[in-house]
Length: 214
Image 1 (cartoon, rainbow, N blue to C red):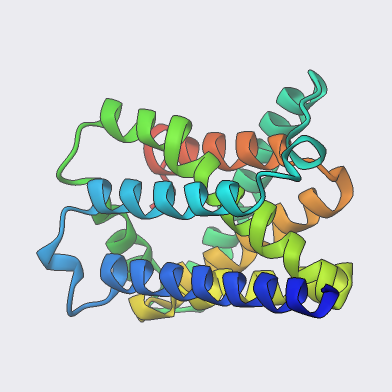
Image 2: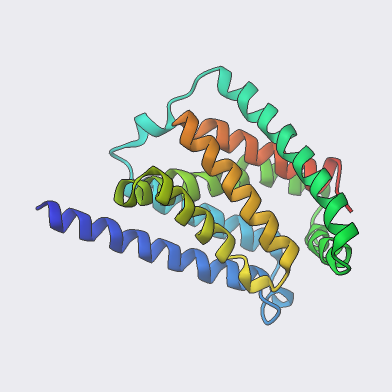
C-alpha cells in the first residue's frame, strides 16, 4: 500500500510539473509568446496548477495553510528585502553584463495588453498566491518528503528556474532562480505558505508596477 501511495505521489508530481513546463513554454518561448495574450494565459496556467495542487493535497491543507497574523508582516517585509536584493543585483549585472539591460527591458514588455490595475489585481489575488500554492505548497513539499528538506529545496528551485529556460532570457532565468530560492527558504523556515504567498504577490506588484527596475 505504501509503495502504491508513493508511486501515485510521484506520478502526480511528474504530471503536474510537465503541465507547468508546457504552460511556461507557451508563455515565454519565442515561437508562441507573440501568439497569446500573456495575462489571461498566465492567469489560467497559474490557476489550473494551483487548483490541481489543492485537489491532490486536500487532506493536508490545514497544516500547510494555517494563518498567523504575523504572516502579513513577514510576507511584506520579505518582499521589500527581495526587492532590495534585485535593485542591487540590477546595478551590478548591468555594470558587468552588456546584455543585461536589454534583457531586463524585454521582460517588462509583458505589461502591455492590460491596464496596471488589471495586472496588479491579477498578481495580488491570483497569480502570486497560485504560484506559491503550486511550487512551494505542492512541488517543494513533495520533493522534500521524498529527498529530504535540503535536496527537496534545491530540486524545487532548479525546476522553478528550469521552466523559464524557454524564454532564452538569462536575466529572467536568473531572477526566477533567485526568487525560487528565496521563497523556498522562506517556506522551509516558516513551515507555512501564507508568508510566501504574500511575499510573492507584493514583490510582483512592486517590481512590475510600482517601482520597476529598468
